[in-house]
Length: 192
Image (cartoon, rainbow, N blue to C red; front, side, top):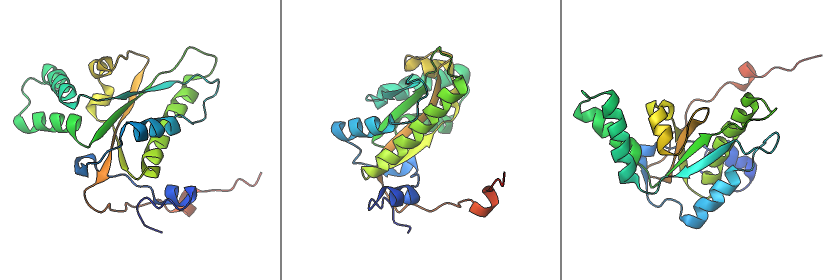
């Protein structure tokens, strides 16, 4: 089955999920109730110790985010040309909805690696939940995800990290299928 967002069953939804390009997303994006439901669904992940080692930041004022992001970029790269600057602004303003996921490990006997895996599961659930609501999502990182000043914009500091920028909207055009792995090449049965 190759239909986008086939919601007949959870299995078909997962099997048909694909990312859309953030720059190609158009309105509508999720309304407040839909976004609340998407985020609540995303948070239903394995979480050893019930630490909630992650959090969401919904970027409501995209123009202000673009302005701050560009200032951070230019402080590090004052000679950036027009195209670079436009790319930074586009990163901040593309798609109808932007959610930033912050991986926020907690002091605990639970290893940080397990907490980071929980954050990764939350990110995947966010993409799946957006699709379940009839939207397309795109999980992006890039330089901004690794910049301490960008993290600080969202109230974060080390050891927290930006797990990703999640763009949610409607696809402006049909989504292309991407190559998928040969399952026989990546699956083994351990005989014991």
